Image (cartoon, rainbow, N blue to C red; front, top):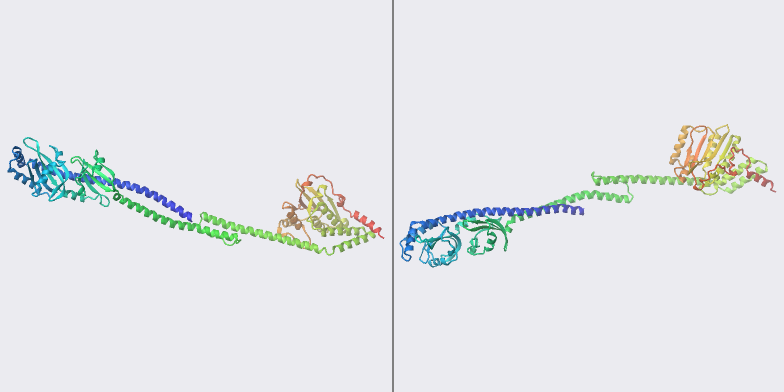
Length: 626
């Protein structure tokens, strides 16, 4: 969940910050460009207004100087400089009339060098005006041509007042030599009115100023700067260009937009503080920041919801895993979606169900093994019950054998001897495996006893090669099969029945011991029933009083594997049962057809019930007794 929150924050914040930074920079550049364009339009309009405004006064200078009274007055002064002239009053009236209707005119005066001063105002300081020709600009006025417009400070009504001065050189009509100056002083009323109607910058804190080519302020909102040359630094980058903009780094960073007036030789400039210029950009930045924070908050809320929906089923799955670790396989994880988590939960449910099935199978397998062991123990118990006082039975059978030998009853002696050996084989030892030779000997003893019972009705034959004698076989494998042949073949017929027990190889790693008889055989349905019973593990040990074919088959598979056991031959005359066993590696090379030893009958085809070597030795022992 923490990772999801971090990743969501990164995925939201980083793109928003990049967009914000790029937007901020682009908006700053656009706003600066628009401010330059807007300022340039404003100063162009102001410049045109000022030029038109001052052009009117230039016309007024021509009207004044070209007036007949003025011309007559100048001629008189040229002819008789020091003589009083009646025309002075007429010229004064001309000046008064020109200034009367203009509220922006401070004073109009004609200054004749060292001769006379005529002014439109009665409050003019004559002494101050006489010192005008000593000012720096006075000598720079051209002798002919357009008037010169400049800004300066004059002493008016006892205080300093900034004015815009329009000065035009006066020449003598007769000699055409300069000998005076027409000076029109204008206040800044009209200029203030125009500038105040214009708002520069977002907050209106920008301002417009006018400077001449020498860097002297013609106009500035701060009147103390008018007439000073504090603008020389600004004029340096303006000079040589008609218009443009520049970033001025003073005490405060400013954007300066300017335009040059060719007629006035002035620069009209607009100054905007960068702080004021970027006010809108700051608003955009704040908006972007608030948007980033808002979307980050929404992203975190969505991430918490998403991660909770993702983590909740994982936690639920984890709880079920804990239960499975404790061995609880009940219940299932609810699958709420079809995504990867839903697929994982579905797979977990299938896994737990399969585990439960496997555990149940293992449980029942263990249960069947335990039941098999219990039944085997019961069988062993039944066998142990038959061992009650075995020495008494041995001695009794030996006594019967001895008594039969004394009376030359060889059949009874043989039967007693065989029964004693069978009893001793069944009771003695707890070994699971015996050799084929030992199992054959016990089988022959059993058949010898049965032959005494059935006589000529029973014949048997053993054909076991020498290589098979030492092969391992489960104890009590052949006797149940021979007993089945006695019960189902010999007892059911009047004709003689022969039982054959032979051993053959089945490839390189297996051999077979086949027990067959010449009895009536079995039907196909009986064969299918026996084969089906051999396949079913639940039938193991269900013989109540003897170890049957199923028990023999399952014991062989238990000891040697599922590839071994009993196989039932095809239906037909007689019954055939094959015992498939593994071939011991040490004896695989001894595969000659050499029959078993004399103790098994030397491979004779038919047993006739003759007395054995033990019977003959027993008879001699009985006869030698005192």
